[in-house]
Image 1: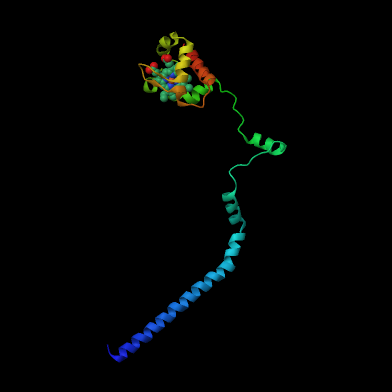
Image 2 (image 1 turned 45 degrees about the vertical axis):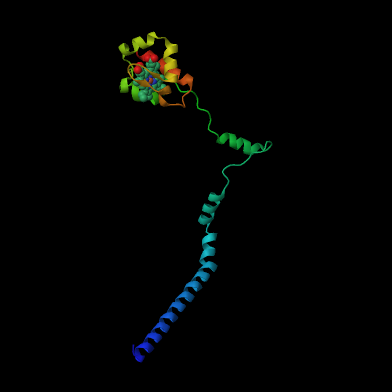
Length: 167
Ligand code: HEC
């Protein structure tokens, strides 16, 4: 390398270094400025505050006996127990999927021949099979039609409805 080249190279590196230095200064200056200005605004933004509050809010709270109002509110918030559904309602919700078209060997609603022998077992047996599930020669009847949320009484009402409609 000639002397001339070396000098050029040194100056060049010096200029590049200076520019990098200025860039860094600008970078940190901008950061500290935004920390004092924009960041403050962001943190005071109601939407941001609401989101933070929602993230930090407790999952539940203890109601002390004696605090009448929160107790009443908490009780009101709990889902009111549903009135028992009628046999027809339960059938349409939980049983119709199989027992209307005869899916997987299910005896169809209104199919007198298919129900005669079953009814001959007696209502108690039919209800028990509906509640506990039943694997017969025709197929598999899941307990409560796969609807564990049904009460025994609701299931029994649905069986009664099916038998009544299949005589
Ligand atoms: C996933 C399909 C399916 C659903 C849903 C279903 N069943 Fe069944 N059910 C069957 C099948 C299949 C049979 C026939 C089983 C056999 O005899 O092999 C059957 C049979 C029965 C029987 C006759 C049992 C016996 O002893 O002969 C009753 C009663 C019955 N179901 C009631 C219900 C009620 C009530 C519901 C709704 C709560 C319901 N099923 C929902 C498939 C279903």
